[in-house]
Amino acid sequence: MLTDLKPQAPDKILALMAAFRDDPRPGKIDLGVGVYKDASGRTPIMRAVKAAERQLVETQETKTYTGLAGDPAFADALSALILGPDAPRDRLACAAQPGGTGAIRQGLELIRMAAPGARLWLSNPTWPNHPAIAAYLGIETPSYRYFDAETGGVDFDGMMADLAEVAPGDAVILHGCCHNPTGANLTPDQWRDVAALLTRRGAVPFVDIAYQGFGDGLEPDAEGTRILARTVPEMLIAASCSKNFGIYRERTGLLMAIAPSTDAVPVTQGALAMLNRMNFSFPPDHGARVVTTILTDDALRADWEAELEEVRLGMLGLREQLAAALRDRVGSDRFGFLAAHRGMFSRLGATPEQVEAMRRDHGVYMVGDSRMNIAGLNSATVPLLADAIVAAGV
Ligand code: PLP
Ligand code: TYF
Image 1: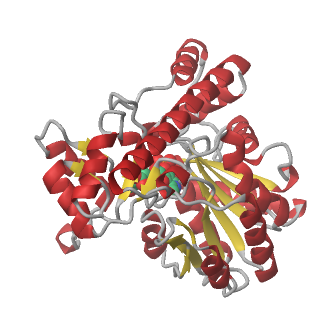
Image 2 (image 1 turned 30 degrees about the vertical axis):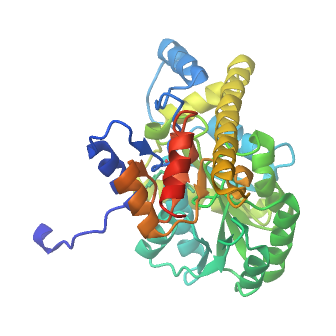
């Protein structure tokens, strides 16, 4: 049996991580995998997470099973963080998942179960796991225009033209904020236009929100998701706590489904519980409990928000430093889009050959499509990257 298996293509981003590790050069710069790093290159455990974990160790009295959808307190706390005070709570079904990836996978399973044959529209480009998981589940993935390589911004006219072709019942993945891999994002007015268009088309938005708090702040980063939730009759949301709580390996995520009516909630909730049972029974609890502890304790929450804000402002500062360093070197604002982008990533717009030259000649590791993890920089490496970009002829 096992000898009949075919080799699988490796995940390019994870393969790049290994290539970086194996590079002996001391001055190498890792702009690859989307993990936050501080100026010294460490991915710290956030203060509030440590404190919540200490509290849990002292006070937790059982580790017996939770419910199939996880602890309802986690769903309440995280859905409130994302959807805000106007959340359509009476139409909401939620189930905890192993990370944002688990939530995406389960959301796609739900779509396949409810609407076999529905297509899944993806931004061009998008996070490679979107098309990979959809293909694995046999879901077709047409794409909509998104990134304008000329300006480094969103090709909004192209996006709207393509979304006008979406069929009723199709699902559309939208990055809630901090678009991966480009860093280019919609304005609130553009979100309103998308919400109106998808409602008109009878399509179901599926928001992937993995970087809330990394862009313009916790509230502004959720604005697009909230606009959709206020407007459309039904939608799915896959949320990840990996980045904004820094609990990557704890596998903490939530799938939310906004049903078209209160009456449709029990059957939706039942489907979510059943999918969890079929795949893994009970979702991981530790990370979810840490998040709940932080979000429901005023002091811990304030400390978490403060540390997240430091992280966000640090990345913004690096963006501005890099844009300025490039302005000095090329004598124009050609790279100004780097400061306008938000989140961990920016697509530089280099060719694969230029990306390879930066790796070979300067030890700069970015993903082959020229996606850079801005958090991989510090004040000392910004000028080195700017030199490498210019030397490669980008
Ligand atoms: N969606 C996007 C766009 C991401 O970049 C990530 C990043 O890791 C995720 C979802 C889910 O992450 P995780 O499964 O680690 O929570
Ligand atoms: O895009 C990234 O770098 C992050 C981390 O299979 C990641 O989202 C990358 C690849 C992968 C899972 C997570």
